[in-house]
Amino acid sequence: MLNRRHLRVKVLQALYAFHQSDTQDIRANEKNMLHSIDQVFEMYIWMLSLIAEVVAYAENDAAERANKHLPTAEDLNADVKILSNRFILSLNDNRDYLIALKKYKVEWHFEPELAKSLFIILKNSPEYAEYLAKTGDTIQTDKDIIKFIFKKVILKSSLAEQVFEDKFIFWPVDRDVLQALIAKTFKNFAFDDAKLNNLAEITGNWTEDREFVVDLFEKSIRFDKPYQELIAAKTTNWEPERIAMMDTLLMKMAITEFVNFTSIPVKVTINEYLEISKEFSTPKSNSFINGILDKILFDLKADNKIKKIGRGLIE
Image 1 (spheres, helix red, strand yellow):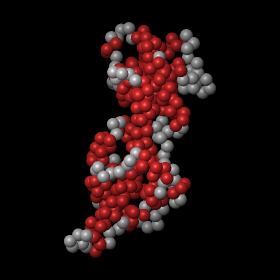
Image 2: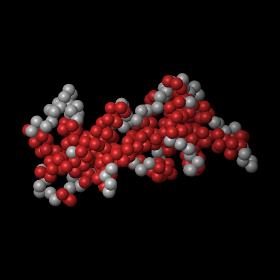
Image 3: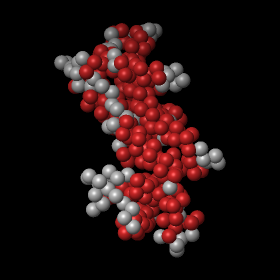
Image 4: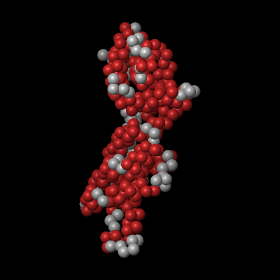
């Protein structure tokens, strides 16, 4: 699921788009930000659907083999055990999954060769042969072959990679979150009764997390000018154009949390943005941001502008 760091990245992306746009429409950019979060869940549903498509292709493969000009006995009796895989049967009977398929209009007609090519890789693997030979399967053991399809077949496929990159602009960034969502689904699907198996949730508490991302986005824009002045005062030896835009945005977001988010500890805020900078800014950004934020934080404390409550003590 999306944790707070992932959500901060979504806000960062939205702020970057806002400052780069000509109109700087706050509401439009906020809407796009929330849509980008929803797209992570959409990507998750598409991936679950692709896993199901690969499994379902076993029926097509068996029919093709039986219809050969000179089919062998093995061709005429292709093992389609995977069609009764408990995880897939439970998934295909899951109400939330079926609703999501309709909501996102999930269908694979636009890439008809994908499921086939992935199934052929699966069919030729020793893991699949072992699965077909195994007896006494349960939903727990059935999940093993589905995990293999996901991790070793789909995620290793350059064609599948290209399809998801083309469909989801933030695929490279959100891929790790997707893997966590799928892993959570494997954990959740532990019962033979499909009604007891639940999809993963996009965040731990979307009501609170939605408020967090919207507030962080809006307040970072509302206080952009005064926070820019705080940064400028501590970077007098730097020409503004030499400071990476991402560094500036990360520092403004951090200051926004320092001052306006009373329940988030200062140390948590600093650590989060330093980690984000490692992935989204320059190699030297980490130490630069840390140094500037330390100086700004010292002044904010001296001016009594940081008020933390509960677990969010400054120290």
